[in-house]
Length: 213
Image (cartoon, rainbow, N blue to C red; front, side):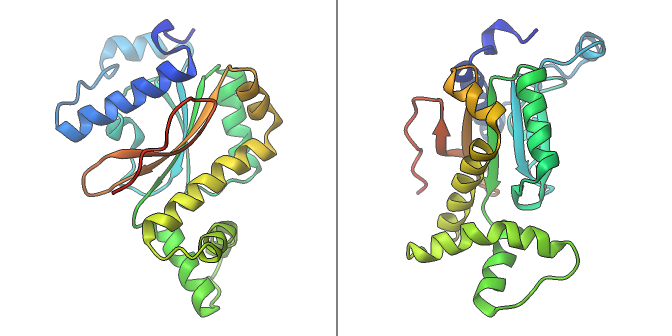
């Protein structure tokens, strides 16, 4: 069972952001990282959040949100691009493990977004399976360009928003959980230099987007 203190989407979101504030301040508590927690979670897991993030090595979820074993169900791909396996993993976290929150985590200086912007601008084609990543990020880049966006943060935020929309559009399991109030989806953008995670978009949470300055 999920801890009652993080059993709702709002409580899970607040807990996650509180951990990020501790990480930024340099006062992490390192919760649930001891031998007792290891033994407690060995029989079963009840993560309070599914975190679907970019695979960038600087986005270690349990570190930047100051969490521990059994807290986060983490799914990561380059540029947080989503295919059937990703959707199935997220649905597993929500419908089987009962996580009340799904977070899409992007970040500044994202290599996948940068490569896609270059490919769109220059008409080049990436090699190997990197091409698949670029193709899945391309709609986000085209949408940002069509809106007249020029800043890196604008492209990152657009890709985060479109990923959130894609998850809800393609996963009936997730969209029904959000509609029923059992789960929420939040899109966050992480700043590599200072470690802060800012809200870009949310579905199922009554929160204003956090403006990036």
